[in-house]
Amino acid sequence: MKYIVLILTLLAAPLSAQQVPQSSAEMQLSFVPVVKQAAPAVVNIYAKVVREVRRTPLQSDPFFERFFRDPQEGRKPRVQNSLGSGVILSADGLVVSNYHVVGMATDIRVVLNDRREFTAKVLLGDEASDLAILKIDAPDPLPFLELRQSDSVEVGELALAIGNPFGVGQTVSSGIVSGLARSGGSGGQGHGYFIQTDAPINPGNSGGALVDMAGRLIGVNTSILTRSGGSNGIGFAIPADLVAEFVSQSEMGHSDFGRPWAGISGQSLDADMAATLGFDRSGGIIISGLHPVSPFRQAGLTVGDVILSVGGQTVNTPSEMIYRMSVAGLEAKADVVFSRQGEEAHTQVDLIAAPEEPARDQYELPERSLFPGLILTRINPAVLSELNLPLEAKGVAVVQTGPYAARAGLRAGDVLSSINDEVLDHPEAAAELLSGKQRSISMVVQRGDRRISMRFRG
Image 1 (cartoon, one colour):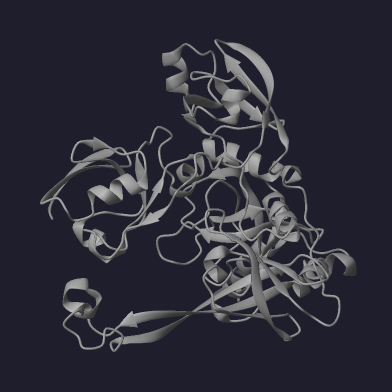
Image 2 (cartoon, helix red, strand yellow):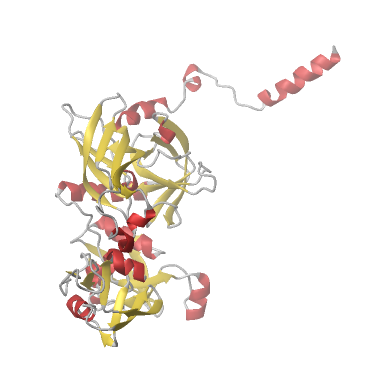
């Protein structure tokens, strides 16, 4: 009998340490009201991409292709399906999702919480930010989520992730905001500034909502940090302020996201670098390079200055600075605080798109050339930004390789510095040298920070 009493005592012990609900209100305390408010505005997205592939590797090779009677014979379409989530942002049917869910889709279906289905089209998308704005046409006003200002979000707040993980249907998971200003390393396509959460996010949650306890959207779930493929409690969401700028640009009729151009190169000023350079503190971004037409140069900044804040917000990484510029929007002015030789100063920077000067003069090499189908462009700030080239890049950039240049080892984003010792400054000059008239070709190619020499027989 005493053994039974002892067992009952041990079983009861853990319960005594727990707080027992004292009222019916406490017993009913839950996330139900928040979910009821937010869930109808979160949708499931089914996207279809049709790609053309070949049956055999030989038919993919330009050399062997000529031996096939009909080069198109081996082609067949392959359908790739992707699954994700989205959030309705307006009563007339604007929806935000991830670019990696819908960016290249040929057919997009949006399924609402009440199981109604609509066909959607992409109004604006940006692979670098991993965001896309869709439009669906519904006969009646749709439920939507209010956007919350991102800078009001604090670490430790409760948050709910709503989406369609693994295609099982709409699911809600809870957690907290674990961190702010997370830059890079997200494992997804997005770059820049993220909100970190431990609310479980799994495949299919991409593009879904991260909401606060008032049912407001604080971020769009985009990726996780994982080794197994499942949620490990480290998820990332794109802040609502950037979503708001996407909505604004889509409503203005833009199909491509206009991101302000900095025209600078730099890196975070950590403690070791600060000590080496004689700064009394770490933090900020030290400028190591400035393009001649950079708006920061025009505002008076120079190499060696340390950018401390943009638009009243502290910045510690280049990607965080670009985020602050992006949410401010094009044609705006940003207040910039910087340090020069230990003294703080203020200035205003014009937020402009990367200039298209000089003109690109894009050129595709003809069939009779050494590399038919190779597309070259003159380098200007817009090209630097699009191809992610170094600020000091000079010459002619490769936009598309075509089949023969790819076999020769060229890649999109390569910079052709010279051909046969002739320095290049225009695509047509490169095309003339690659016309096939010369018996041999020597080429200097800049690929990132590597300098490559190539030789070909004409």
